[in-house]
Amino acid sequence: MLPFDIRQLRYAIAAADHGSLYRAARALEVEQSTLSRNILKLERVVGVKIFERSRAGVTMTIAGAQFIRNARPMIDSADKLVATMRAASQGRAGGLMVGHNSAISAGKLRSTILCWRGAHPDVDLDGVEAARGTLLAGLDKGEIDIAILVGEMARNDIRRESFWSERVLVALPASHRLAEREIIHWTDLRGERFLLPASDPGPEIRDMLLGRLAVSGMQPDIRMHQVSREGILSVLGGGLGLSVVCEGGTGARYPDVVYRPVHGEQGPVMIAFSGYWRKDNGNPALRRFLAFVRDRYGLAFDIP
Image (cartoon, rainbow, N blue to C red; front, side):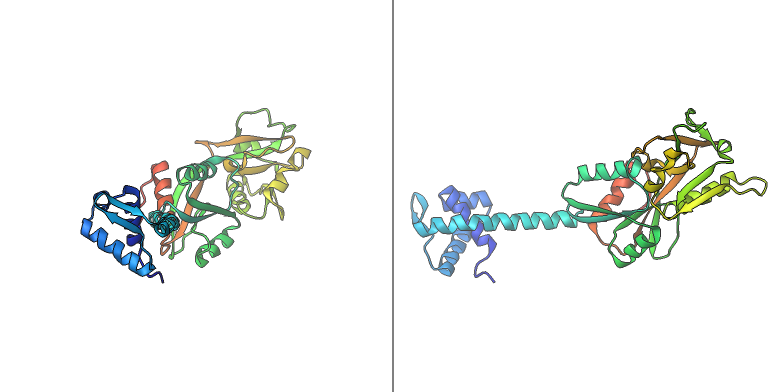
């Protein structure tokens, strides 16, 4: 424990800078007697005379000059510590862990994260891509602040809000008969073979295909593979089949593979993204991130 306090150091540094107890007191907006009394206490504690006093003001002794020189970094560090703690309490610093189960090479999740980084450079933002179950377990353990997932799920201890929607696109070989079209309708995809990853968001897309393409008791040809979506997209150019991706995965390019938006009867097919976070998460950076998303997309949910 230090035998003196930060305030006494501030008074001494101000006196050194102004060369006058009177001017230092005015600059700090304190009584001159208060400043003078605290500097005397400081001198007694450190055992050296910091200032020579005269009617003209104060001048530092040799020992005093060395003391003030060493005191300045202490004050700077204390100021930075206070500023950091205040910023963290307001969500302008600290850390934020975002989980997701979809690609972010393009789309709204990518743009949201990049814009957030630009607006909050002092927040240590990190992310993890994993399956839905892994991310929800991360929320339970407090390792993840918010999970942004394809689709919807309800749990009493987890808050969910709809964030945005992204287009659904079909990935197909450049040599495919549908590759020349600017848009592709569901009816164009009947009879095609689809390759999907067994990991997220493959099951969500499989359910979408089953709902849109099943006709007269005939099920679409869907092959689920224990590889990543990148692994599937990297071989589509060889004519092995088609795949379906969210818009966030279309920023990456693969040999002889093109993306085309899928349309239904009402226009472009969209898939919903929702944010999930624990109701008892007190991270101020999370509250600021939620406010950022809410304002960016014109949403209306409340943030405790």
